Image (cartoon, rainbow, N blue to C red; front, side):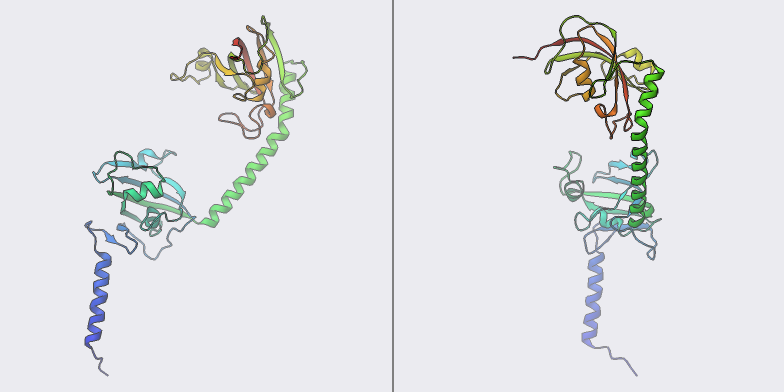
Length: 320
């Protein structure tokens, strides 16, 4: 039986060709334009492989440059973990033809370039308040990406839940061990003074002279802070900083100044400094409840008692 090829059939076929041509029409040589406005050029592509989806963790090499061909970011140079890759959860598309849309077309092992509107990237994806000076308005950015690995969302969530449980267990252990560690430190260092109601231990090493500062007084204090194992985590003394490997040439090594009793330092300091007269030197042993607590801070782990050598240099009463 012969198939009839009518004028209507020809028009339908011609319209389909036009649609495909229009869809692939691109002002950027070698790039195809998708219906959402994304321009893409694949160097390696496995069309049958599983693509990245919203919530998946993606690990990729990434660079992008502006319309003047200046590189703005290159993960080979800018990755925080010291590798050529960056890793993050794939977010919801921030606009049609976004970089999130671009990654959603890729499978692990794919590599491609994408041309995306710079205004939309900075203002919608990056949520910047304005374009940086090196980005021309209504210009385009060229992204180059190689997708190294996709970790499915459910696997990411399981790993996150496992880490949270491990962290919770570690926190409970540290909380339980803190009183024992503090008791051992006091015994090893023959500290027999009674703690204050808050748990602060103050060992006087040198008496001061005159009145003691009150709330609102501006105090000047020299200090060195240590963990119970003797590790120095901060100091106002340059020689101590150098010995501990903490020296920073950009910071001044001089007495710290702050208004007493106004919460600008840990509670143990606000309480302890109020016990000193100018010229006094001593030792504070501060439990975590009046230190950095369950969260810790920087080099200070959660539930860490702290030891401070302190000297009240001077203070001035609050202005009336």
